[in-house]
Length: 343
Ligand code: ASP
Image 1 (cartoon, rainbow, N blue to C red):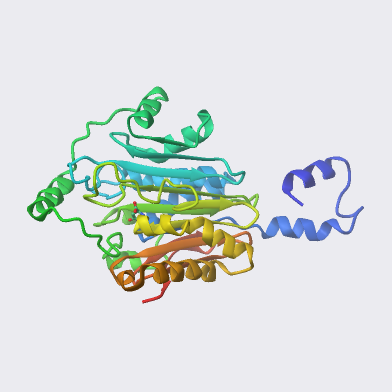
Image 2 (cartoon, rainbow, N blue to C red):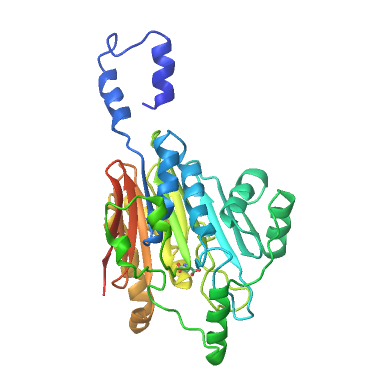
């Protein structure tokens, strides 16, 4: 029984005393503990903002939007406008968001807008469409009150680009997102100030959450792959690949080599394994194993990772290569976890 039904019934004078069967329902309500999970150790900082929404009884949708906006705003961060550019020297951003009722919105190949995730939400809520790209996505953002930023590369991105131009070779770097700072390995970490200090190097943050009503939502935002071909779009804005939410079953987000997540309809495939009774970690593992089978001897050159949450609020993750970590904030605190992996 959901909270609204309970309130309606109690308003009619039907309480747990008049109908004993209501007692388990009330207990069920009390059992719904909000939880948020996000990719990589950068997720620790993003989780703080998401948890702030969840603990006040806010929606999972607001939580996953507010959470990843932290990462999009971080200075010298590789998510958002400070990220590495494409091979033509221009930063292009992709993002997606999905709620508990199959509403979803995405943007891709978006330039000079600071919060692609917020634009994706506007696409979901204020347009008749699901997915806007490029100049159209930018025009939509401007029409909805977003500012056009300068488009100048961050100092770090300028250096990285200059370095990259020496060889001009596109090569995915496994676990490029992972923060090397040992300070973040403290599982008790949840102090926003401290979490903001440090160096980071990641392209994507994905976040999934369950709120106090038991509803699930997810978000994903990225600069994609550094020095990608102009026009390249990865898995992150593709509903069913980088992100999927089915409120009856669970929510899943991906990170890593987007091309190979798209190939297996990654996030949606993980949800379907959970529907068949697999735990979040098992479901993630089964899809990672499929990527491995498809890629054969090339699997060792890429990273693919999933984080999943089911309707019971259980979280699990799995990656192709060692080195993927994910951050989980629940009522016991903000925890960094190493994912299980194939290699
Ligand atoms: N999945 C992202 C993409 O391929 C990149 C990442 O997760 O680092 O665009």
